[in-house]
Image (cartoon, rainbow, N blue to C red):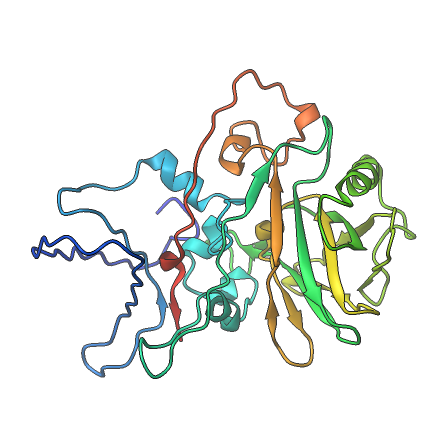
Length: 322
């Protein structure tokens, strides 16, 4: 494979047909599936993709559709980029714990042990906040007072010919964090602050504190910069959110957190994985942006044509069995 994430990997493909062409009653149906080792009967570890179509259907999605579905910044909150979509070995994702994927798509059975609701959602995508905005993503996290939440940004495996070669998509990222019950209520303040900050070099006072604690203030007007660690040491950078009061925290970011596998928080003590209760993507899709070059801000681009693409959030392709 030319794709470094697929190089050296082994893939299998099966076609399963149903010839019982009986129309089901209208309604909502749930599908649960898994793979087992034929020799041991044990549930297999890994991810697999399921495509479902009518009996007259044949073929695969077009390449442009696949790229959109696997692009960094896809509206689907599960398997949010090509890295998570394709990679089998979690250490090559910067050491993401398997509990994250199990939390997104919790397992269970149809009777005695029903699975909890999935955290997979389709995120909203709206227009850029302003002409030259630096804001690409925003989310609401419901957090509890007195807890410490880990927010980890991961470098990922880039070069199969160079052992331990990990890279971040960007050297760092500006963030804007405040208490708020909604994104709309603080989006203007976040846009003004973060966009102005992104046009400057971060000073020591603007960088997240040495102990890694992100400031959470009601009525905040100041953005902070997270400088990612040298990948010659750790393959990830972790900062901490320590809310003084329980409630909703609004987070606005310069880059889409999925680019760093950083779209969730983890409770330091309990290990609980916290996903956004609401999130918004701003501007054109990542697949479209790739035509202009990575991380082009709207005011900096020269676009004559916008193409609207629709991406579907299909949770089944990220099933992870451990």
